[in-house]
Length: 473
Image 1 (cartoon, rainbow, N blue to C red):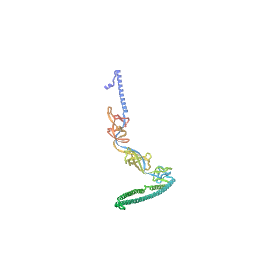
Image 2 (cartoon, helix red, strand yellow):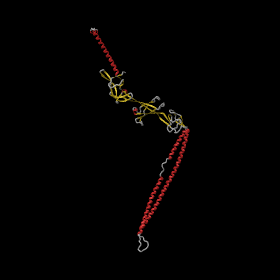
Image 3 (tube, one colour):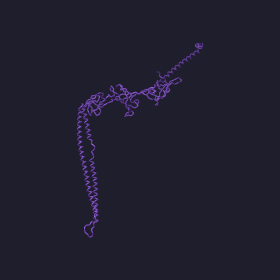
Image 4 (tube, rainbow, N blue to C red):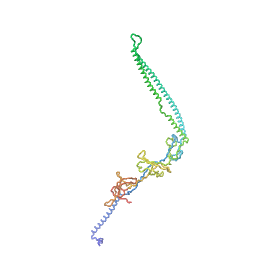
């Protein structure tokens, strides 16, 4: 009864009725404005909040891909040489041609070859004549030396005999003087009696004779000493002459050198004759591919390689150099693939045979492996590709989620937080250590949040504590 009366209010006065209508209109406008503000606030909030994409942290292994460019050469190569100074008259092959053993690679001019052969023969005769002249001169020199040595020895013996004769004569004269001096000294004095006539031998006379004989004896002694000294001097001089004459001649290997020269000329003649007998043809020494050809029509050959033949029947050898950090995930025995681009199909299942430090640069390494024979000829360059899988890490995140600041790695992770508006989503920074990474993922460890999700992409930059909202789907 009361409710029905409320709906059937009777307005008693026209003024009061107008005020009530205005109040109702204002109330309706206020409610509509509040709804619009709420809608605008929600729209503004949706526009200002960063939209983020997250991915879960998960356990997984990492793959490390290694790529190196290197060279590929046949395992067996053989150089072909020919005689130098030959003019090439014609060339029968080109680089890349397959040849059989005995096939002609190129030919040299026979007329010029014949001239070289004649000159070599004349050179051999000249060398033989020179050796005969040298032998004759050496024989004459040896004979003269032998004669000089014999004469020096004869002079030495004659000097000894002459010196000994002089010493003997001087010694005999000295002994004679000594003997006569002794006789005079022993001779008695016979003074002449008084009043008697005749010869007497007085003391004065005796002393005079002794003095004279003493002087003579001293002189004879000096003559003897001089003869002995002269002998010593003559013996020394004669001995030196014998020594000089007996000195062996200096080493002379002219004959041996001439023999070697002649043998070298004979070998050259033999090779020239063999080349002439084969019509001047330079032939392949094995079934192979002509990798390099240095001979061209009209050119003069040299002592260096004329052609390089390769035999691929035994396979190839791949080699590449790289910095140590480039190959830190490679090891001997790892299985790799060689890629040749569009030229040939890749060759897989190959194993690395060696990784050695480079001799030129210790910070680089040489990687080598063998490639088995292939149905088609392989190019000279290839790309080594290898993939190594690590152990399984408990926490791996996309590489895009990894942030770094001042050398420290960290992640942004979403977290629920209570506020006056209810539960909101913010991002929190979590510092981590990077255990390993490749170009797509990183293995990390740290104090992860319970959400176990990381921010991988954001519509705009965010910082710790910023409100965010996840993208749907």
